Length: 569
Image (tube, rainbow, N blue to C red; front, side):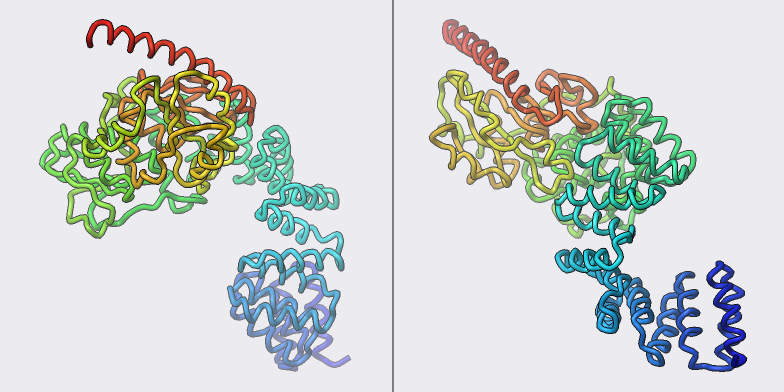
């Protein structure tokens, strides 16, 4: 045996046993004797890769494939290059490995990961299935195939992949966790709970699984258990922003605002999965300092409805002696928010905002003014329709009967839109049996073409082409008697205008602001009525109740109109 082999074999054995320092020292000694020892170069590269020293690992592996071009060498080189984001080089290395040995499963697997990272989903699926053809028990391939299929909307196939991985190895942590996520998104909350608990049996300190277990419990309305779970994970990981945000949502939904607002500041923590954008205008964030004689910019965040809801704080803050108050918002809100009492300027581009003393995100305002359920600034209306826009609608709508605006779908960009939106306009068909009602479509975007397609079955006024922004919508809403809407910005708009609004809410976890079990809203007192699903996904029962209420409402409105006419009012 040549001297370098006498050194290499003990080094390899040390590597196999996990004694990496000993193995590295041995490989380096081998390379002193033989700088072209391909196995030593390649294995030393693997040690570097395991430490995260990817460029060094790639350099060593490239030397190895230059000396002895094997499928194993090229496959591992492709993996290291992929981890560095060198996708073209990684793909070339993996394809070379497959060319050398067509059934080399790790190369197919790494190609699959590479294609997943670059959005080439069909190719990723083919590569992962090829990996499973040659290594049917590859749990990593099964798990990643599950992730891919889930992202492609093929939940049943993804579930099968996860369960196969778990069947192969019940201790395979990621498959339990990913199965839990799939079941959570499918609304199978009890099963999701079991999957997350299985993951935690394997790793009790797995913070992500603890956090998502809290969500599964919350969705089952086991609020005390959910709260205890969130608090447990925060005790273990105090900086876990996603868990802090989830705890905030739970507390706010229960009306426990004092603590809830504090935790809600986690929403813009950059460690969150989807943090709220935090502006950096070059002056301080307002944290409750005195405002007399100062200037403040309030920045839009999240959805249009959020900005409408928190716009109520403008008059309150201006009353504290603000010298200047500026609102930064999306363009569809600009003209509407100009109607706020106390606002000095409304802009749609932060570059247009000059120097101010402070800035604040809109959802941070309740924290810094000390909002509780008892002192919500709820004087309605706090937004108003523009008179010139109102005039357009006065002549377009019938004078008799009651006029009801409808919104049945939200934006597809919302993470829970599939739950909050109705399947379509036809879901509201029972309302058409109520006499003396003119229905007006306030629907924009998704679903706005449905009224034209269903004109013979469900006649209504279709306003969508004339609604260019929310000031237009406000003008139309001001001429209606009632708005019936799923959880969208139009519901907030109706409430802010002081217009009666019936809000249709899904059974799974609803937005924190509508609170648990309430049929009214302290944010829009006396005008908001909430109709909640009794069974997840069952909108028919909700619409049935709304139809009965609408008939009663219509009778009441007709009596009022008759009384007003008889008394000459």
